[in-house]
Image (tube, rainbow, N blue to C red; front, side):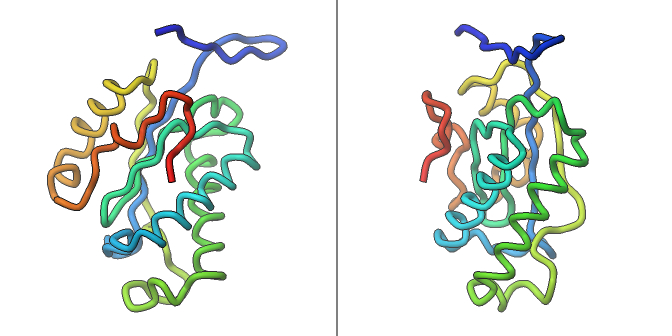
Length: 159
């Protein structure tokens, strides 16, 4: 596998990040496919605004894994805050009726998040990081698909 490096005027390198977000109260809002699709689309829209590349997005019923590439212009805190903030605002503003029975008022995401910086990202490393870092939630849900199924060779997240 060849590694594509990010080049700018004064640097060359690679930066990959694995984030996991959970909905408020760890509710199973992602058990509905429409909520997964809309949330994914808003996370992708936020990443486009930030000019970062999403390598993969995978959902469990009560969490989402996001693999980001070339986020060097943001701190981990800023990247997580902007992705969560935009997707939360848009979901609550336009689609609150889809999850209002599970979440309350102005809360979509829980306050925290999991993060891990990662090296070269390919299908096997994606699977390993999900298994190692989220063992409990990875095995918890039969409905959860392996993130490996979401990884695409052309680096576009699937529908």
